[in-house]
Image 1 (cartoon, rainbow, N blue to C red):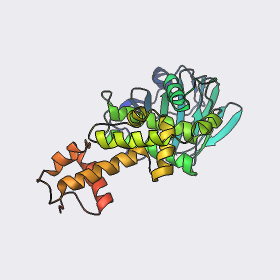
Image 2: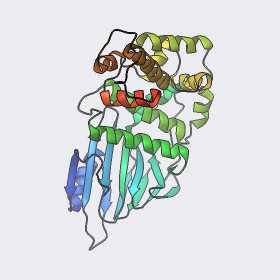
Image 3: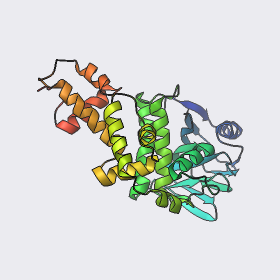
Length: 322
């Protein structure tokens, strides 16, 4: 296992018993067959964090196992190997998984897997209904049928690296306590939407052509409306969906419009507006406020993140005024 172990504060299973492993993993995923070569041993470690629409999992069996879950039915499963190897058979494909190649399993087709004993995976379990809602929100039309992804995720290319980086960032934010999973929050919902949206945008699927078609340029008035809304509401806890709703545009379409017009995403523009206002309020020409008051007054909820972003934007810490 990697050190420090991801999601170590959320252990749900430590066992060497095959039946106990099968029962515990079935409870959080789905009923499945778990087989172990005769005479071999297990050392199962499973860490699990459940959000609102997805869960994060670190799982290693510590022994060579065969896994036959059939159809997942209610969820998609993005598997990102951190160590070791596995072989996955899904939708007529056979994928040799490793830290250079992950997999995404669609819920309406059967799967068989063989994990080597050294295999450890960070996995994202995404509710099927939630992913469908995110896709329909971006498309602006009902889905024509089930979403089916290409099973292999190339983690050496930009798209795969982005998915892995985003997933690791979510896990590390949970470990650091900067992302709460104890209760539903706007930030948690925003991160979940971002993972779902990036999966739809970056991983080839049977609706990729529809996603590309939907990514048309928004009307100039919608872009102006989004910019105006950001300047008016920058101090509030905003999500991409809030900005898109104010502009009467689909979130992904608005992202593309911002990149085309301004060279940045709506959330990057929001961060820039917040930092520009913070610098103004911290300048010597304005009544002196504490750095904490300015950070919270400009929409930040985490002082460390505010200091990091401020330094990256202006080249010095927010405590340096003038």
